[in-house]
Picture 1: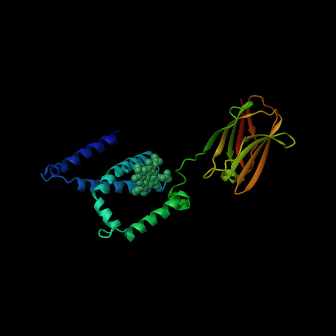
Picture 2: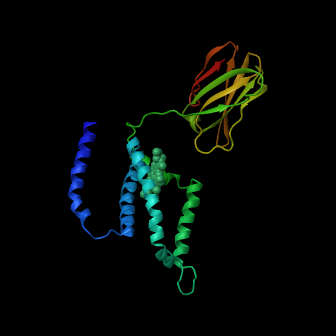
Length: 258
Ligand code: HEM
């Protein structure tokens, strides 16, 4: 608080030194003001952008980046309008009206990069900054995708919490109920074929209609290879059942029977 107050009072004193410049009679040109603001906003935007790129994601950095991003966009629109004639001249021949080479090449460069970005081919470039991030400072987070299935069917409400092991971390998971002979009775969760990026851990709210005992079959699928893990559920009495760990695939799993 005291630090902020000191900062503000210093800023006020510094601003006072600028007053004689502001008092000069020469009228201010909007075009120049806009160009200078765009340039200064770009410097701060690029600095905070690079900090975010190397995963320095303190809240004030994210906020400053976003605010200067918006300021940049606001002023850049006017900057483009002010310089529209020049932009047209770079793109089209004034006399013949034909498109210039520069416009074709600039469009090709941005078009190719756009396609490579949307298709995630350039992910290694976008994620390169991660190598500068200090691992020690980063808090360990575990992500869970919350899913709800069989909501409207009859059955016993359960919640399955599954934290995958290292090997299984890239795998999509399907969950089935099978009788003790291995015959599948119900599918609680089918593997998500549309899923993009590494699949998160699972928090599944669902219903089981089968009577215990039964086996809960977890199938981990990655790059066409599947690994099945089976866990016996002996009774459906309310409570939390801890399912046994499986090296590499199941770090921890709990079935809450409601
Ligand atoms: C010099 C140009 C820019 C650079 C280098 C840059 C770079 C970045 C980087 C590296 C991130 C972090 C991405 C991640 O999550 O890993 C980011 C986030 C972001 N950028 Fe930019 N950016 C630029 C311009 C802009 C502009 C013009 C806007 C417009 C508002 C903007 C808005 C944002 C927002 C909203 C986020 C998310 C911040 C958050 O997590 O709260 N950026 N940017």
